[in-house]
Each structure stands twice: as C-alpha cells, then as structure tokens.
Amino acid sequence: MPQESQTSSGHNPDSQVPIMDELEKVYQKQEEHSIPIQFDPETVANPETRKLFKIADDITKARTYQIETQSLTHAEHQKKFTKSVTKVILHKALPRRRETPVTEGSLKAKESEIGAKIFGLFAPSETRREFFYDRRVGDRDSWFFHQEIADSTGTKQVTLHYEVHPSDVLRVSSHPGTQNEFIQGQELHNFSSAAEIYHDQVMEQIYNPDAISSKKVA
Image (cartoon, rainbow, N blue to C red; front, side, top):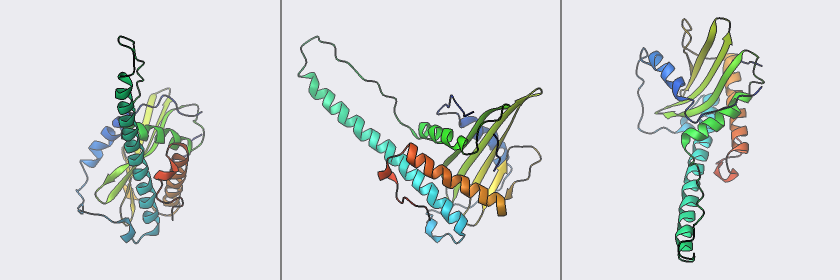
C-alpha cells in the first residue's frame, strides 16, 4: 500500500464516483469473471482472503444496521410528530427538525475519511486521499485507494482497486503502464493490515457495537 505523510477534509458523500469512472476504462479491457449465485466466505481456503471477506461482511452488516436503524428511528419520529399535532393550539407553528438521511454513500465517505488517516499525515503536495471498502460484486470484494498530488506540472492522481477474490487479491491500477497483478508477500500483508485497521476504526468511530457480528476478525 502507498504510504504518504494533515488530514483530509471536505469529504463529499459522492466523492468516490470519479474514482469509479476513472477505472471504468481499465475494466473494459478485462475479461468477465464468472459470478456464482451465492458465495460463502467460510468456504474460502486462502486464510488472508478469508480474513478480508470477514472484514467486508462486518462492514456491510454495520452499514445495513445503521441505515435500517435510522429508518426505524425516522418512522418513530414521524409517528410522535403526528400525535403531537392534535395537542398543539390551532395556528401555532410547529418546529420541524430536518435531518440528513444516512445513505450508503455518506457512510462510505465517513469511512474513507478515517481510512485516509491510516497512512499517516498528508504530504505537503498531497491534495486528496481516499481509502474505503466499496461492496461485493459476485464473488469479489472491492477496496479503493485514491491519491492526488499537486506539483509544478499540475495534479497527478492514481487509483488502486483491490479486488479480493476467493483465492487471491488482484490490484488494478489507473496509472498508465502499470500492470494489473495479484499481490503477494509484503504488499498483500500491508493491504490486509490496512483493511483490518480500517475495520477496527470505522466500527469504533461510526457504527453501533451491536452491528458488529464479531468483535474480533479471525
């Protein structure tokens, strides 16, 4: 994983969209993989990828829990609000609280803000950094690392997409001339460690502990 040395700010819930667009041309050149109807992480033989799948499952469950809990809470507020109307004097203005709904996109943006800090302080030339878990597509989990650096020649950016397959982790780069390859050794260990730290920190800072299926990722 790239390691640079300020913290990121101004995260937008849709900030990951350009990252996906940037990699689209890379994927158009790749062969389609067969996608099974169902996928069970427990059947994965590779211990490194099994750990990564369990991390992703925890995060997915936590996001779902957060969104569903918000929906239930919002419904309860609406019910109480409706009942309170009958108790208010006619023509009296009622204060209305507007809350920004929690979405998967907004949760990923919060997670990415935390994920970006895993790699240390921003370098003076570094203008943006993202690191977040996206979602599962068939039998693969998607993780993204995005970095932008500004110098006298302009802004340079690179996006790394880590596809966690049942047996290996494929690194896909947006950088011209960089070969897409399955990572091994120290690079695989670094990515796995970053994902585990990401898991622990987003669970602690964003999600209710009740949403965690297992406190400790095996």
